[in-house]
Amino acid sequence: MTAHHSAFQPAPMPTGLVRHGDQSYMHNATGDLTAVENIPALKKLRDEMVRREFGYAIALSEQITRFRAHTMANLGAFDALMAQEYNVTVGGEKGNRTYTSFDGLWKIEVRVQDRLAFDAGMQIAKALFDECLREWAEGTRAEMRSIVTNAFDTDKEGQINRTNIFILLGTESDDSRWQEGQRAIREAMYVIGSKEYLRFSFRDSCRDRWKALTIDLASA
Image (spheres, helix red, strand yellow):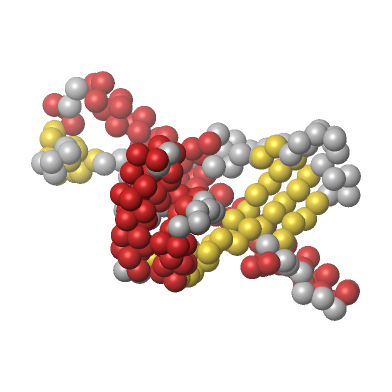
C-alpha cells in the first residue's frame, strides 16, 4: 500500500500591509510608512519571498518541537513498560539511554548534558597557568600555550568554552601549579541545569559504521 503525504504547508505570516483608507502602506526598516505603490517591484518580491520562506521555517520548527515531544513520550512509555516488566530503572549514568532495533541497524540515543557555569575561581586558575607559561618560557611548546589560551577564551555567547576547558583538564604536567590550576577549575565549575539531546543513527549493515540522521538545519 502506498502512503500519501500531504504537501508541507507554511505557517500563516503577516503580510506587513497597513491600510489607511483606500491606501496600502508598509513599514520600512526604520519604522516609517511607505506607500506600497512607491516600493520597487523587486523589493516587494523580496519581501514576499522572505515571508513565505519564514512561514515554512516556522512550520518546520513547530513540527520538530511536536516530533521531539512525542518521541520523548514514546520512549518514556517504553521505559515504564520495561520497569514494570523487569522491576528496574531504565537509563545509565545521568539518565543516558540507548534504544536499538532488533537488526541493529537503527539506533536512538538520549543523552543528558549538564549545563556548566564557572565562578571567580577561574581567575585563580588562569593566574596559575599563566605563571607556569611565563616560567617555562622558551621551553614551552606552542601547542601547550594554545591549550591554555583557548581554554580561557569565550565562545560567541560570551561563555567559557567547556570543550577547551576539558582539553586543559586532560593535559598532564608534573608542575604542582599546573595541577593546582586544574583543581581550581574543577572547584570553580558548577551545574546550573541539564538538557536532554536526541540522536538518531543508522547503518547499512552490522559491520558498517553508524551514520547520524541529520535533523539540525545548520548541519543538513
